[in-house]
Length: 106
Image (tube, rainbow, N blue to C red):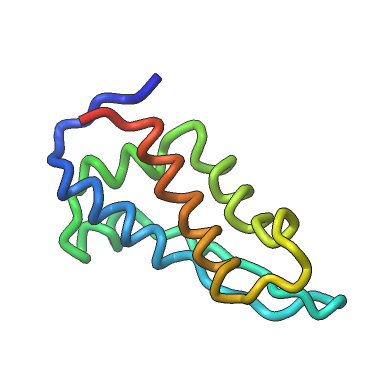
């Protein structure tokens, strides 16, 4: 079930986009396979970026946030070994959007 929040769809999309930007390609692992990193922002940093402060706090404090980050960084494990790095990155960023869309109701 989703968590109702007092923000617009546009504000929620902006938070999702910001968090997707926190997902980056990391250094290749010992097998040469790409890795994905997620740099968790603070609510203050997100507010400075002009995002809805309360919405940011709620997303970052959500009980599922750590699980989402874990799924983001393990995305390469679920991709074909020859998958292009840009594709793996897109899949990892999609994880962020899917988690938020499924759990927040406007």
